[in-house]
Image (cartoon, rainbow, N blue to C red; front, side):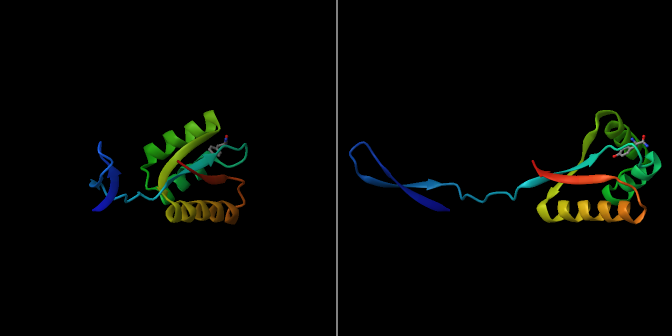
Length: 106
Ligand code: TYC
């Protein structure tokens, strides 16, 4: 527990307890972007494989991206988000699909 010095009404220094400022690490949204070429089944497979979604969840999220252009597919620490993006981008590249995955601070 940290302490701050405040001034009371008499101008006297008093010690005031403050809550410890343990900042939570920032979170990052992982975004999947629509394109005209990546097959729908491939996107569903990506969401199942790297984001732990069921087939039904993955299909729903894929359709959201297809219709709206982009969707958040998960929220993670910086390191985990970076890993997810790299995994998706590598998997898409290896299958020669133009699928794009990015991250942004929440
Ligand atoms: N728009 C693609 C198609 O019609 C499907 C698609 C969905 C592609 C989501 C990318 O992130 C994506 N085949």
